[in-house]
Amino acid sequence: MSDKSIESQSGFDLQTKLLGGAVIGLGVGLIGLFYGLSSGDKSPYLGWLWGSSFWLSIAIGLLMLIMIFRIFNSHWTPIVRRQQEHGLAAFPWLGLCLLPLLLVGWLGGEQAGILWTWINPDAQTIEARSVTTVSEDVLHQKKAGYLNLGFFTIRLIAYFGIFCGLSYWLRKVSFSQDKDGDPMWSRLGMKISAAGIPAAALALTFGAFDLFMSLEYQWFSTMYGVWYFASGIRSALAVTIIVCFYLSSKNRALDGIYKQAHQYDLACLSLAFTVFWAYISFSQYFLIYSANIPEETFWYVIREINPNTGEQSGWFWVSMGLIFGHFFFPFLYLLFYQNKINGPRLVFIVSWILVFHLLDLYWNIIPGREISPGAYVGFEARPVLGTHLLWGIFSLVGIGCLCAWSVLKSFNSKAAEIIPIRDPRILDSLHHHE
Amino acid sequence: MDIKYGISATFNSAKDIYEAAGKVRDKGFTSWECYTPMPVHGLDGQMGYGRSKVPCFTLAGGITGFFTGMLIVWFMNAFDYPLIVGGKPYFSPIYPFPVFYELTILFAAFGTLFGMFFLNRLPRHNHPVFEHKNFGRTGDDKFMIVIEVEDPLFDDEDTESFLKDLGGKSVSIIREPIE
Image 1 (cartoon, rainbow over the protein chains, first blue to last red):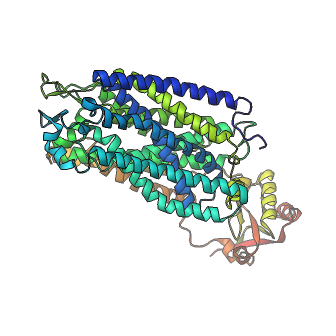
Image 2: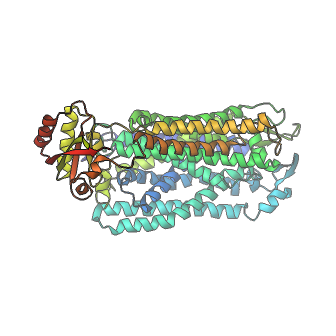
Image 3: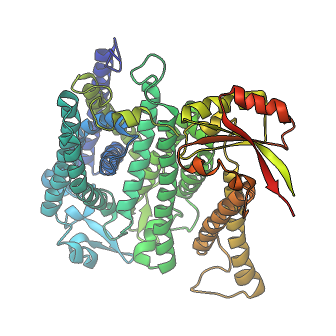
């Protein structure tokens, strides 16, 4: 326990490497954004949004979990919660990563609507098979009070104000308690969480609407925010399990502290949120399928078939992959007790969940309608594989390295003990058993 | 008339019964039980019990429920009386999914409840230890181990002295009245 940094000797090295990865990844991503601005190719923008959505979902999941643990005054979580609190250090950087997309909306001129079409009133769009412009589209006219650049900017600032503010305060109450041991900090943490859960829930719901759902602004689903929440919690639990497993390996900081009982409970939460994700995702599909209204169904149609020929497209297999790979397999796997208490087995399935979460975001963000006057329905659906994947991987790695760098900096900063040693619940957490 | 049910011994603390239980387990007894006024964590592991088998019943119930739901929908809507509703297919795994899902949960819950009843041999209205004079204190401040006659290792004198050696107090025979 005397050695508090994760990377005892090479902490500085790893941090530098991560920063290098961030510079390379973000550098290539930014080149892509400039290239897209000059050529009108939106794929670097889709890739960038996809890359940031993954890390943002993890950070949001961590934030929600910490507040849920706090508000229940949960007895087993403090040692896990401390590791999660370091993850919150990434929020300001995530906000920074979304800034270029917003700036293009303001300064992009003719290309202002390159990612979010509705930003540019002159951009072409599809309404009931005919090509029209955004300003003439009745579906945009009705939504213009909400979907306009000024309000959009204010909202994005508010979301990140909420995320960063809550992160700052949740870290402060936890880290301050290490120094003076005042139980007042725990009570304050509970109060912050009581106010913070609804605030963050609204921010993440409308954030998902604004950032991802508005890519096809004609489409709408009230489930969308809950879907992003469920995905975020799943991926945050996965990251927590991987980090705690690593830290509890031999001679590392949590060796003998993080025990089977903690891992078992985190795994049970993973199972619960796997079911919850499936419930939400299926409900969204089920309601749209049952209602069968064209302005909603097109969103699923372009994820299943080529709308011009009616043949199955590559997205069909991605959709099937999500049903079986993102739900059935992890669900059946996590039902078994041994798979939950065995560290490597659990790390395997949560890594699997992270990969499929990435695919789920890809499936939600990338498909869309590209205007094509010669086509039977007036548009072509974007394919599964394309330059957006290539740009996306650079952005994903770049933003990931930046977030990992900020989190590692927090771990190594000595601002906090490895576990909250003066938390009133610390003994309960240390002695937690099944 | 009555028959012998087993031998009981009481202990004064959770620690005592925890250690005694380990020794009873090591001796190889299988038909025996601990009675405590509050849950003693780790006691079931000390007695040599593994994981509960109830989850197997839950899983079996859930799978049965899922396929029962499918069968109901297929039989009613696609086989016995095919009917087009809202332009949906006669049978599909999508539109009736709530039926599959609800029946999965219902049957899984039945499996859990009745599996637990079955494994615990419930319902059972009475038990010989209830009549025993020392049993009342196990709801208050005493801990009791009972080794049953039906255990293959049971022997009137050996078992009694074994329990006394473990530090058991009030070692006495439990009798079960029969008609």
